[in-house]
Image (cartoon, rainbow, N blue to C red):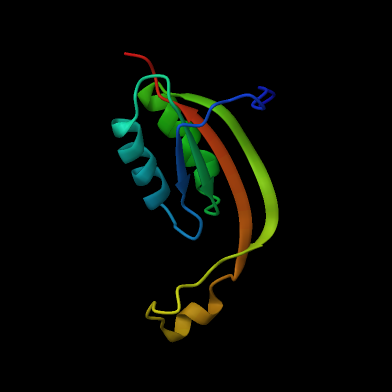
Length: 108
């Protein structure tokens, strides 16, 4: 996308880093319901599925995907020290690509 976003007012911020499908889209859906018409929601995500899911969400529900970009590669994922882990978690990546989206809630 080539839309300029330098002067875009962001009304809501969603940090979904470390979450996987379907959580980022579910959080976006909840925030969209609470937002006023025309407000902008910024989403930060590390799940590669969001590159497909968020544009599809916007297209199907009529919201505008104002901007989509890859912000950084190999971003360290923060692991909650209180989180219960199992042996197979050792295979989980400790870094990921960071994606950023700006979604504008449709006007009624």
